Length: 356
Image 1: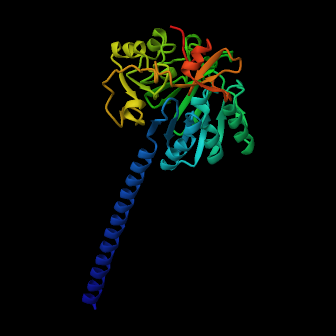
Image 2: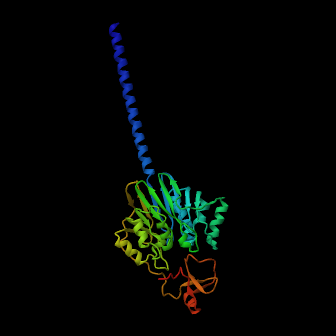
Image 3: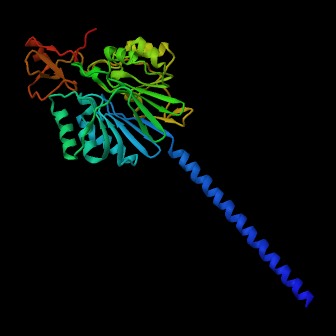
């Protein structure tokens, strides 16, 4: 009898060992799964900034921790391009949509985006523009029953683990470029600066606001125009990297003057006209790009310069003309060749031929 009890105890002890061993294995598996999920969560919380190639225009998609925002959407013919890009990135909801200012090369595609995506907050200034492009955006917002949110300097918005602070414009005046929404985006220790087409006047106001502007990545203002990126602004931002969103244009963007400034400061430059979409990834401490810095340092050449067969658009006043893609080009259907425009004594508008 005693031997039988001993045998039973041994068997019970063996069962307990097996059970304990199984419990330990289950715990190890559970820990591994949690580690894997944590790793996946960490990957999702990384910040991605996609400077989308939309030719001569701006469109920037920002992704962080399952949240998304879009700054501008390129020209009128780029709406579906931006839509496709967002869809490929599996975006269906945009926490924020920002139209920096109502020039066509910035808000031209926004009507498509507003119509096709769930847009939670739309940031637009109070500036209105008498163009079909602007009306299309307003109509799209009405169709979706969206309301505009007017940005205020100092306002802070959350985007997953990142946040952005509005730094401009302080006032809305007559010069559309100087009404551009400007912001600083922070993710951990990394900072990114955006300023739309802000020129010298707004850049000075942004600096005067006293908000910290230093950033690792500088989205170069106004496609590299010499009317932006003043010495003071470049010093205030003091970036390591610069991104220029630009395409074939009649303005000579990016200007040799701005490129020389960036090069002299030892800043690594990326540009969409030569490298396509530029993607910067932040883990909160370091920043990596999907491509190497551009090394051409090639200034823009006005497209069609000297080509008298170029088609231009006579303004409503009949005193000046717009080149294709001009931000001030409205609904004028009166098209003539550049040679004919010059023969009539017409001169280009200030945006088509900015002063030296």
